[in-house]
Image 1 (cartoon, rainbow over the protein chains, first blue to last red):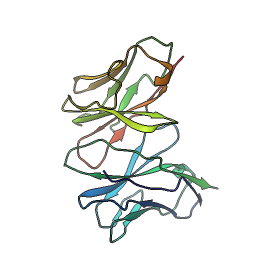
Image 2: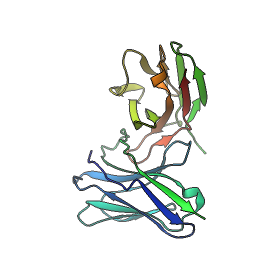
Image 3: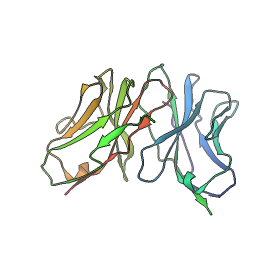
Length: 112
Length: 112
């Protein structure tokens, strides 16, 4: 699985969009980009994933660059409850669940 | 609302004692993962099972850790004998498709 690079921390004002970047320059053609988050003292939570097209769900949007070497997770209207560590993970998929390799992630702090 | 459950939520024990952690995966999920989280190492995979068969336990110290799935509704992680360096939060996760893993609330283990 390709390695990812994320900034260690970011701040965002409540109600504003939070844009979390991730670099994955060694990603290969069959690897997906996943985002999970971990709120303090809880288990990680799946947010979104994508291959090459931009994706949106009720939690967030995922923007993947055309060369797929980087991506951005967007929380459109951040709330205090979005304060968490956000993990960007790159992984190939075989149709069945496989292990996740977590990096150090980005600590997002949403400020009132 | 289906969830992964883990027991106990907190465990304090003395060095040398046996520790057993339990996980009930979401009904119908065929893959179960055990992760460990420490401040120093972050989240790391210990072992995982598919259809109750162990697929990978290379992340576990073999001499003291063991993981089993006696049936489809129960996964166990046992440490015998426990050591202070085993102090961590242990997460169980389950999944069926490649796209999402559901994590339990974790067991916080403290070995004195």
